[in-house]
Length: 140
Length: 404
Image (cartoon, rainbow over all chains, first blue to last red; front, side, top):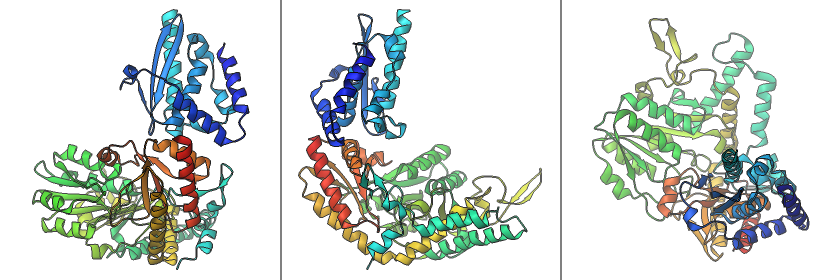
């Protein structure tokens, strides 16, 4: 599936929720259930220092695709990470570079990507793109 | 007695809805809300009095100057400073602390020691660390106990004739502890040390009598006491302000300028280079008037009632732990729920229209002391109600249910 197809799926799923409580409960459940990163990658180097919640991101290349794993110490942040990883992981670097994050707005989570939110997510998206750019350069 | 319905009518922002719910504002320790009386003065200033002060011979400039200087007098009277020129109008608490720290650069040497309390906001730590780097003086820390109270016996043991300065906040922003500054000032003076008190968190809740405290420097910001942001006060005893060199060069702070030599203006202008926040200063005076009209005794009694009501209700939530349980504390509650990140609780509360602060509250050493990433902090003002606290308690219960 392409990134935009996955994003359409996520938008469809979120459209089933009636209110913020259902949306957040879903994210919290995602955050709780998904093992996101291997312990060995939760290093100081992989940490994105948000003001409040910590975010770790690890990337590697498998068959010309970038595979992301990530984690956070805050569960809602972790839920959003799970959504971002679903959208961007296991994709060709060029596709990641050319993609956007507008779907976050459409699923009612826009406030989490505000730079003042201090949750590390804005930096995480930047980091995802940086990794994609770096791997793309290697492929060229 | 506080007439809460009448007071709430003074604050238009309390009619706002956040995420479809009535705003419940419990982030008062970060900034207080602004009453209509202060908003009116700000509008009136720009509508009728806007001019630069202290220089113009024209009527508008003189009217603006009068308003600005009247505000200084109101602030002097409120804090019971001996002279109006001991009140320096600053851009806020941080500015005041930096002004003093910079001023002491030439007055300290590497044999000297300065003491800072373990309960400080970063703005009352970093300027002194920088001062110590410049002068070679040693920074020592007055420790605290697990209730979040300073250990006075340790403080006294740290004091010696090498101690030149002591920095302590009147009330801790992260935990709400009210520090025994009167006793601390007295002990410091016995060894000849000067004391700088950060009053940012105290001034919204109590009325310090600066002469009775015998404090050397006291700083605060208007925006935590119903005034606008970008303006604050540095009080310094005349003898100390005379000793400190000017902080910034510029207009307003000079007496005579030639290319060979400049002589400086007297107090307070020596420390007020450039065009000040004129409107902010005037509005600061109005905010002080407003709070005095409500009455600090009434404010303290009512906020104490809110504090105990909230503490009792929150303590019934299983797994909830308070940080900062000092005997003497103001209406600030810092807490966590076992196994849940404070950021998550703050996010869920926000969805319910409840504004709290989460994180380290610019006091990382305190969070390190408790070995936690941060806390949820609910801080109450005199315009908050018990019904709002009930909503907070329900909100925290719901957040716990969703997040556990």
